[in-house]
Image 1 (cartoon, protein in one colour):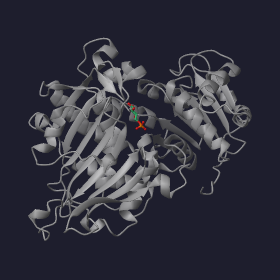
Image 2 (cartoon, rainbow, N blue to C red):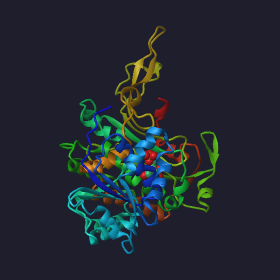
Image 3 (cartoon, helix red, strand yellow):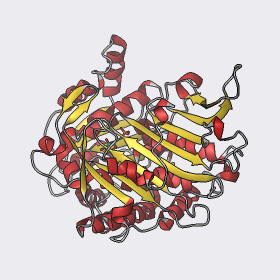
Image 4 (tube, helix red, strand yellow):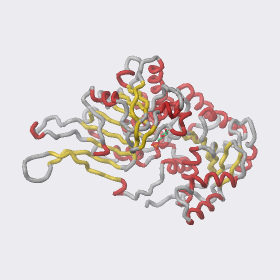
Length: 491
Ligand code: BG6
């Protein structure tokens, strides 16, 4: 296990502390970092939410989440120590009601301490909360604000939110979370590309045939159905996670890993994305919605039954995107994401060009293009698919095999999860793992083009049985160009 460097002492106010994100991700993340000794004892956690309750009741609520994964004596003892740093304050996040003076009191002696405000709230409240933070003078010089996605639901609402947050916090104190940027394998992408010489000379239209990005989930909309039904896969996943992955694959080498150097290069990719409009949307975008089916051998209902009404919300989307610049001219970037798919799997596949001349001969059918597979989850790792000679007598036969870097086999698997890493990055002030304002807005502009074309009635919603790889039209998106989604998990 790598040596852990503690962060500076900090205070964090978690707004929306009784919500799913705070209880399932944030409090456990803080607790895990605490247990690993990364959070100094002078740090304080203020859980803030509308509901009036004593701190002890909040502790019990949080315990049901944290101790459910491990309730050993040792863990209970650490939990008790941790709780000594957690207080609960009932605050009306709109700023209109009660609680702000109490919140100010909970923080008061610490003007120069690092202070985080984490908004685990609906984005419509980001503006009002920031206004109230400003009005109560809680935005001290070392204060930072953390915004969860989605930041708005289109370019205009994102800009409004960014404007109102920007009235209270300078851009370098605003940490817009895309939790994919906190994943170990996603961070490794930059290192793989730019700390190895091997790939870069052919990482362009001369060497690469196309790129596939898949983020598949086996879960359905579940308890988040009311949010999801207003959002859909394009807004929920493509606008942020998939486009961020595409940026990391496609960007030019930054001059350093400095936050703005990286973000500026990502921004150039977003700007170069070819607009999808009514003339291209039916050709380049497939939308789907899951129907009843079976996942992991269990029958599950279709999306409309799950949300309780007919819905036009897409739970699957596949896109053929193009980046109009010199490096990527003519190289499609295929992206797909969906709920209730066959399995949970996230991966990036960079497929290189075929060899220019087949020295082996047609009788030895079996040459395949090289593929670099970056597996984000589960079974994190990197594979390079190569064609080799099948050893043994009996003539020349070819085998397509992986050079396999499995994280589980090569590294200590016990690394922090994305939220743990991102929270510590906010305390350290490392903006590189967060989205800059212009990135969020540029991503919305591109996604808005697709939504506009859909709204103009330009696109069908295809059904797919739960537990499959999405509608057949998704396979056709590639098949019409003589390509196919590669099943990296069985490679
Ligand atoms: C969230 C989406 O941002 O990412 C969810 O809102 C999705 O709908 C989740 O399930 C997927 O994250 P992960 O880390 O489980 O791949």
